Length: 83
Image (cartoon, rainbow, N blue to C red; front, side, top):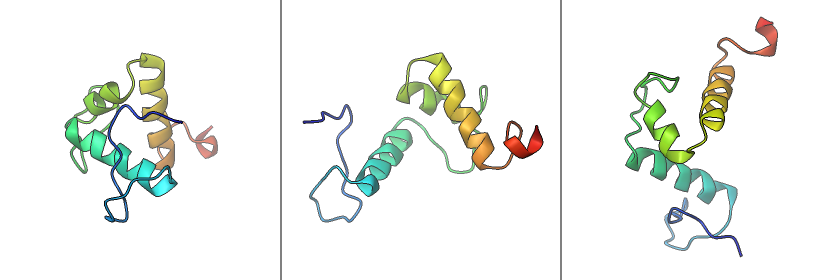
């Protein structure tokens, strides 16, 4: 059985947690919010939400990878179209 470091939160608000994708995303969002995530604030190194990413994963290489993927999803630098 998979153990979660942060309590699961039911995305359907049923009160029952399961190992669904929706519940995983909901738990992640709740974790980030509990660690200071502010909607609309930056998440790159040195910006307001990067501390929440640091709380999520202590490995600096993973922190930077998450920030890079976010930038790519947002269509910023580092996307394949920009290379």
